[in-house]
View 1 (cartoon, each protein chain N blue to C red):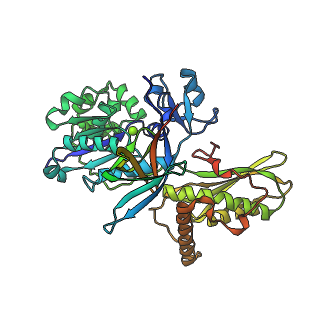
View 2: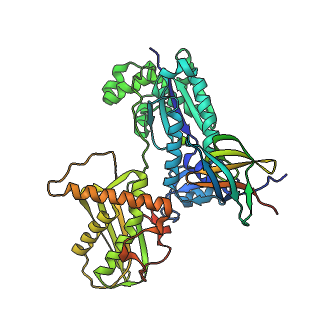
View 3: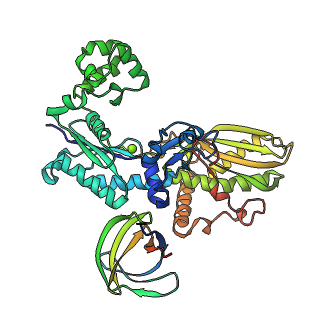
Length: 85
Length: 412
Ligand SMILES: [Mg+2]
């Protein structure tokens, strides 16, 4: 079986900066311009993405009922996007 | 009190970072090489797939390719390595403030004071190993022992992604059988000397009389005997990692030949922007400057000299380079290509002997200005700010930022 391949996609993110300094992503805009609201942030941890080669703070988020990772890498945000063939 | 010392070694560091950042490389044998040009480049690091072909550090690219014809050769990215090195250090510092870097990829940690709260050295080492894998995507091997020499030996015994403990009760059976050359302090020359006396293992060193080593090798000899017997007392010093580069250069072939000094100045100033940026990220200052000039008859000339005060300022380096150029170049022909190199680099921690004739205040202002520019570029991109005279220079190739020369002074 072939492992699915992934792309590193930087995205525009709307973030709430809380008074204690923590950041909460609220929504992000995908490459095609569509905006995805983030229902909930489930977990925040420093982590690496082996799939696309990046590291930073990883946010486990719920979007449309599905769990996804979003990474804050220095000043930017990226997501792991599967390459569909 | 018995100490607990960890030695953490990131496996195949440069190659691992390259494969992490570009996962497409992972299935291939990969070597990070000092220069992509086959005649000059040497292998700085390789991944396990390349190692399986016998590719070894220090050999020329063409030699490596003879052993492994599909070898993927990539240039080094010291800025990235520095980021990973710093991130690893931040993890180490969660366990102790005594962290001593040994190169960019190795550190000693004295965790003696943390064991009461955080558990045994082995437990701490495993936690660090897991965290580096999870947070940085890299593997380490760690050694745990009661001195620095043995913990370093331990980190070499099992790799990658492993922890080896060498406790006081068992060090003799664990390490005395190892070749003497494995021990810190036994270089190629010492190894040769030792083997001429029939001393081949660490145990041999330990069991010969100490006077013998003192007589043959002086103070270093005594140290070797002490190391082999587990008597190394050296402390884990507070040392930061350093980028192993001696020079940083940047050069271009201009779109049209340069006809006068004013044009040369603009090109030099542009080249020095990138040089300054590299020096800044490497925490280095230049104490000398070198220029390479090739005229339109393809005749090449190189000059270098020291500069009065060490600096990482792009404008100061450019001025020094230009002074040198003015003093030496005779303008017999127009210039085709030009390289500036910052040489004899020293760490920025290195304090300067201020020259009595230089204006320290002026230099300080310049340095602060450079740092502000550096910060603006970091936030908004490299081309967001530049000297006005560098705008729209028709003789500058547009992609000159990509052609950086490191670390041997050969274009990558
Ligand atoms: Mg290493």
